[in-house]
Length: 143
Image (cartoon, rainbow, N blue to C red; front, side, top):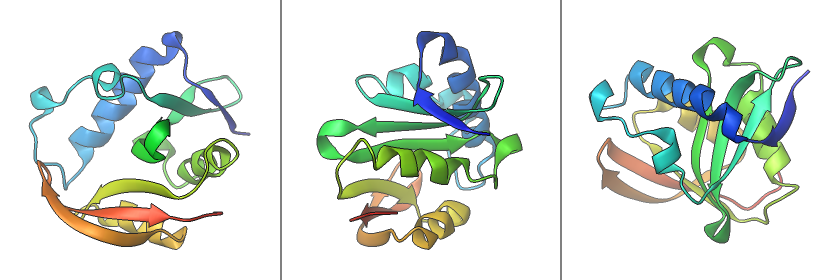
C-alpha cells in the first residue's frame, strides 16, 4: 500500500538519492553526474510530496511551485517504477492544487512523455534548455 505525505527533513538523503539516481540513469540527460545540483537547492521554496511504502520508505517524489501550479520535479526510484507511484502523486495533488497544471518534459525523455500523454497532458509550447528540446505540457484536469 502506498501513502502520500509531505516530505520531511528526515527524507532529505533519500530524496537526493532518488533524484541523482534518476538523472544519472536517464539516457536523455546531457549533464555529467558531478554537475547535478542538490535536490534541496533545486526545490527550495517548493512543496514536496512523497510516495512511501508501508515501512515509510520514500519511493517517489513530486515537487511543485504552488503559485504557478507548476510541477517542477517528479521522480520515481528506478527500482520502484511502473507501480503507479507517479500517478498516485499526481492524483493526490489534484486534491490540493487547482488546475490547470504545467510542467516541462525533455523531448528525449520518451517514457515520461508517454506517461504524461496517457494521463491526458497536452503540449502547449516547445523550447530549448540545458538538456535539449523540451515541451511545456499542460493538464486542465481532472486526472
